[in-house]
Length: 117
Image 1 (tube, one colour):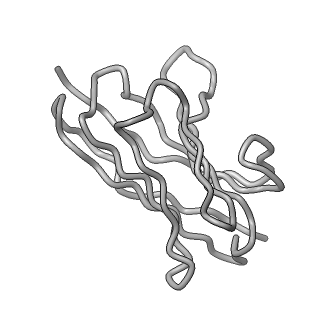
Image 2 (image 1 turned 180 degrees about the vertical axis):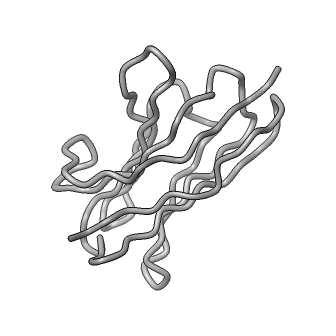
Image 3 (image 1 turned 45 degrees about the vertical axis):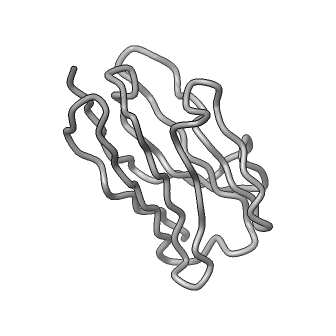
């Protein structure tokens, strides 16, 4: 059974940067799209960024220009570089994979990010 493991979250101040990582276990996501989503307390899960197997990327409007998604196919890792963090970026960040970046059938358990003002 494929599992996804996120890491890199934490407590930072506004304007700081963080890099999240997503690593698979029990399988791999080579050749599959991978995406990052986030969910803030009391809100629906929100699309953050996605990357295809050919490294095409897409972003949610609220993070464009600040976040960068990338994948290292040798290390089997997908990253989310988050710069210029804002308090409204506070959420649990989830990595997911499936047939599409908007069609996820495997989720990680999430890593929390808290941005203080």
